[in-house]
Length: 218
Image (tube, rainbow, N blue to C red; front, side):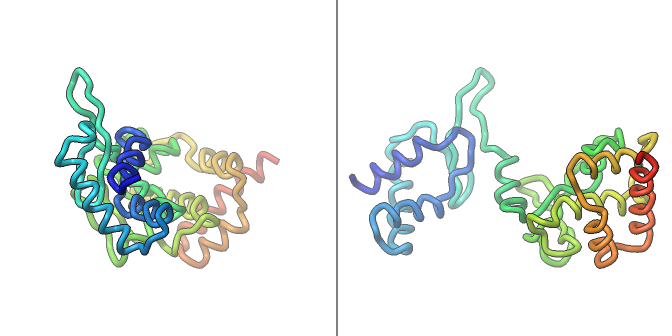
């Protein structure tokens, strides 16, 4: 099987509209043929270019260098690449970040206002909040490096910290957060640990109010 045949087969097995990264194709080529990664990357670049130029996959589109996708024709035109998957791949996976800001408060039910933009706390952001023009989202560095263990805890504490900076209009926001904490099996001990290390005093006090809701229910 030639490189072009192998890579075409690889591309045809990909889900439509999902981002296809040439770096991942190259990894597959290197493994299948038992060749060096650098050689596989070169072969992948040439093969994908020829597949595009020769129309071997009419539904294949280039989003930007190194990223492709398979489109679908609809009565309204071609579908584009999945922006949500691009955002997840770049900023969230695997356990690399989480959504924060006003959209987090809206998703939790703390505000009825729809956010004008989305904000993600991510390890991919370095020193300050910045806007990703291509994906249409803002990213900011988290309080501490995000991982599988702390991600859900940092989200809750972000929500508590944002309560005096955003238009919270829920009737009982602390009850909503207490229910969220209980439903997701989060530990108040761990919440307090992260709050004490990375958040301000107001956030700690709000966490105490939230813990008191569960205490009253018991």
